[in-house]
Image 1 (cartoon, rainbow, N blue to C red):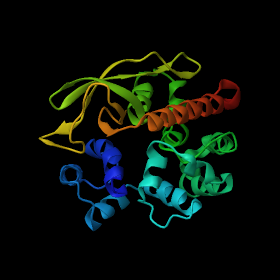
Image 2: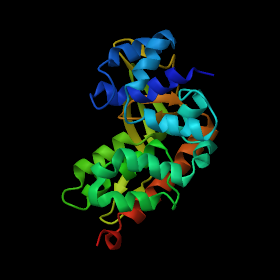
Image 3: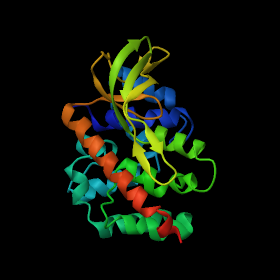
Image 4: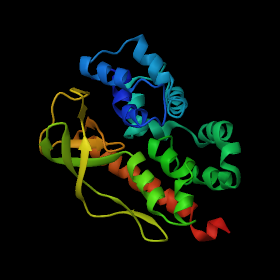
Length: 250
């Protein structure tokens, strides 16, 4: 099994390379990935991701796992697993209250209300519930909010073709119909999997199931993992649609 710190880096690298989160060390993350090394330096880099790290601690604590970078914990946060269901609603509520209540403002009640409806500390819960982009879909031109939501969520897909450092992946896109978010039929999408000769995966082949984050191939998924990610995606979308429905915003 891949060390948890390396697995975390696979998913954390793409937003870090864009300057969105974590220390400014995206080249270092790639070098760790290429070398397949997980040491104390990589652990410290993981700790610099202030958005994700507390979720890892929450999942680990609820499951009696000492290390927040245990690969089981990392997989639960980015992909999904039964570990998420062992985080009780009160713990998640307290976690979100401490970190986001002041920032969320009037939207706090909607965010807190999503927890008993099935909210869990999955990355896509953070994307669709904590970030303001779902609300912004209704407040004007939805183009940019939809682009960010599509890029930031973890997307399952299947490799169709490999062309050097990029691949074509068939993945279901996120669509907005003016009232609700939904997934459309699978269509081709370009993504990178290596940069400057460095990457986290040794190879990719047509037919591989993969996960995408900000147009980057993070990992190769098993059929079980792909199905789990798809299930949590649908669940988080349903929560987002209920929480942001016009009646809820009155």
